[in-house]
Image (cartoon, one colour):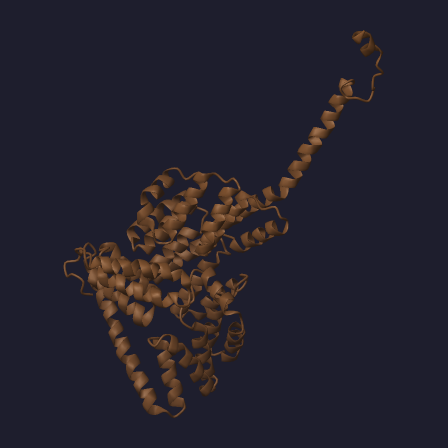
Length: 464
């Protein structure tokens, strides 16, 4: 009976289960449609991530920032987008933003090992190379497509530790393995500049720019070196090219200084007035983008100098007083202030400033004697001498050069207390305006305390 009833039941000719051919056609149309729709939904994220990765590799950070913004607008950020954004922040030295972005990338599915390796690069780059040196060496053996990133973090970390020889060794590999990358030439130029080899540094920067004409840090540094050699017209060419960068505060500042040197104070004043009207945070970021964080009040110094040239002495004095309130040892600022005081008829004050500048510059001649002595016996550590050079640069001439020499002293004797103390005090002062330096100040302050309990490798103890 059951069989009879089933046989007599009307069939639905539209049912795909009763019409296998139609069901197969349905699957052939519907499934590819779903796959294509899914792929189309993922396509924007895929394209953004590919372009973002390429921009980072090419060191085109402005384009990379645009792509991150585009991903946010399209709501197509993926774990890989977050990972690449973290890498961008690390390269732009926005260190505090990196850990939360990497954690978000991990939660979004980026492999744990990939996240771990990026954290190691962050530690190396922020002065903790010694604690991750073994991991970095293994990563160099197995770069997984990140060879240039590993080399860069290794070199930056080595320089923060004062390990110049290590940095130069890695730089050699970096240049050889990545011949199209401008960054190793830029990094080498920074070392050469600190070693007072300006011509060799300029050669490295020219090589970097041949590989990437829009490598703004190289163009800025080359212009600054040329300006320091009084090759003003050549420097202007570099700064005018660098003004094309999006945040052009740093090259505009240097261009204003060149215009002052060319006796074009009105043009310099126009540029400086524009810079003074910008958001101070934006200006600081502009200096960061060319690898030279703003220290002191450079724009105010130029304004004071230009106003003095234009005969606006009262205004010049106000600007220069602001500079010296921030940095009483700014020798060029003190000299410019002395000139202004003399123009205002305040001769006694001017004479005192001129005398102080003369004494300081006489003291600075000690640098040449010390550097010559170090060069004559390079196999000797000369820790106290290196520390003294760093102290003089830090106090009177060029703080970045001072950092380099103090770190170099610690590279030869990691327990040398005076170098740690000088760096701790310097970074603590910077941290009052920029919290990024607080960690470095704490690290050197603790090292200075610890060094008092440890034997120094330096024969003359802790006397600078």
